[in-house]
Image 1 (tube, rainbow, N blue to C red):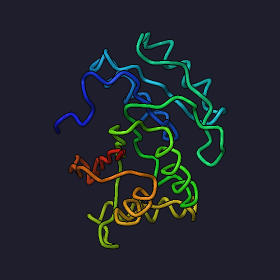
Image 2: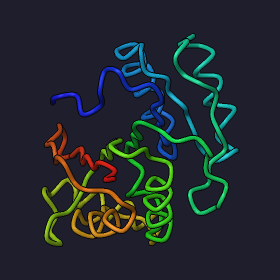
Image 3: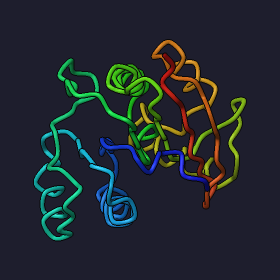
Length: 184
């Protein structure tokens, strides 16, 4: 996959409301690969202890301590970011949290900045695989407000937040990376 984030970007936010394993893999693989990027981790306060332990263990100089971020609170960072990356989050949030999340990203992303969202998505209301259908069923059994999200609904949320879809990359295991850019 071509790199949607400029190698000269300086502030790169990684929203971390995902599983601890996904977060750890992301920081350990991406931060060393892009040493010129300054990663600002974020998550709800309850997750900070674990995040900080991973960061201390990894010793990555380009990853900052986590900011407290509940996507539906008004206390989003005052800084603006060149890029925001989120993995495996939209399907574990309620739809109202997804709405807050995308609106918030629209507020903190610089003009021309990119938002990359990784995970499983439906297209035209249809699962892309039987494994995604099973995964959705499992998600909804543990939390009826979660579930695999429809690409079209996400893109519809992105537009009023000032985000324009640039790319949709196929990824392993029936996942995708959706890339939006903040328009001027």
